[in-house]
Image 1 (cartoon, one colour):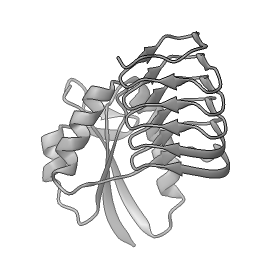
Image 2 (cartoon, helix red, strand yellow; image 1 turned 30 degrees about the vertical axis):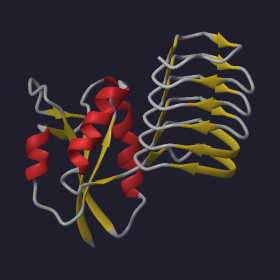
Image 3 (cartoon, helix red, strand yellow; image 1 turned 90 degrees about the vertical axis):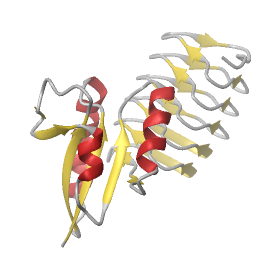
Length: 200
């Protein structure tokens, strides 16, 4: 049985929701014995959910042939900067998927995805890297989603939608079929988006 270390960046709200998904995912593997840690600059706590909280520098110094990471921070700019720093040390991203998500046909995820319970992806969907999908969100057919995109809980994206890089979509938002959401845009919670949204 090989040993690995997996660091989850962000020891707060979303991180505490994601760590149990990572625990369940690693328990399913009979060939890898994984040490799971939180990575956070706030060292006022040393432990969360039974896992040590260490700094990014300490994580980078840990000795292991197999080191992986993911980032449970919603802000796409912060997520992007952390990803760049850790990848520079040849540490591999790991995707984290709840056991009960549904992907119906031809759904492609980039590296470093986090997908929470009860998410649904229908067909012909392409999703970029370091994507966050919260609870009970839906992406319908023929959608393209960029890198560092976050869907808060209960987002519904209809078919033929394009979401560009670094977009944040708030809880309960609905995106009409055929709409394009421009790069670095923020869609507020409960919004109903009926037309294209410009970049920023």
